[in-house]
Structure formats: C-alpha cells, structure tokens
Image: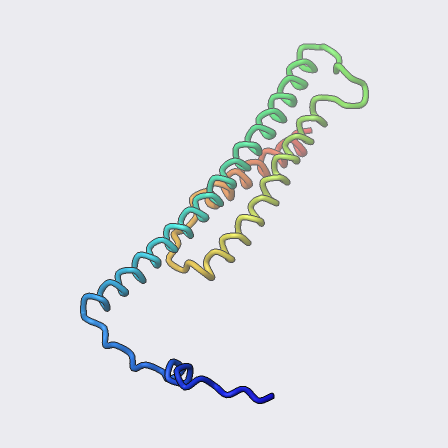
Length: 156
C-alpha cells in the first residue's frame, strides 16, 4: 500500500534561510576559537615539560650509576695501593666500577635517543616549542661519562 506524505512534513523539510549573525555572536565565536587554541598550546607545553622531567630523571639515574661506579673503582684502587687484596677473586672494584659507569652511559644514551624522537614528534604539532635544556645536559653528562670510562680503561 502506498503511503502519502503528510503535507505538513514537506513544509518542515524545506531549508530555512540562515539568520545573519550579529557582530557580538561573531566575536564570541572567535573568542571561543582563540581559547581552544590557547588550551591546545598549554596541553602541548605540558607534554613538553613531561618529556623534560622524564629526561631529567634519566640523567639523575645515570649520574647515580656513574658515581657508584667511580666510588667502587676508587675503593678498589685505594685497597690495592694500601697493599690489600681485592675482596672478590673474579669481580674486582675496577670491573664493577667500569660496569656501573657503562650502565649509566648506556641508559642515558638510550634515554637521549628516546627524548630526541619524542621532541621531533612533538615539534610536528607544536612548532613553537623551545629547545630542550635536559637534552643539552644529557649531552654533557654523556661526554663526561665517556671520558671517565676511557680514563678507567687506559689507566688500567
């Protein structure tokens, strides 16, 4: 059975002309857009700060490993120079110290690569971001730990 449309429904389907917006409405809409943009910038800034804090935590951990390694090495050297014997036969302070310094270096190196990758991804969405102070600090600590490791290898 064919259904006949109600003429009232046909009238309702006709598009109504758009009302012209007042300047106040246009201004409100622009202010909302600007507020959303500001909120997005703040969100990206929070993400950038989180990446910085993560890198600083890795730096702190690496410095701890490097300091423990250096302390183990100095303890070993002090013990040997005073005429004492190493505490263990196979794992002496020099080996433990070099291992801990290497772990600190390697951990910070991997964290720095991760930080660089995260910063590049963030820069795609937030090109106004500032440079990373944590990254500069990472380079400095990496250089120092590499030099310390090389000194321990060649000092023997």
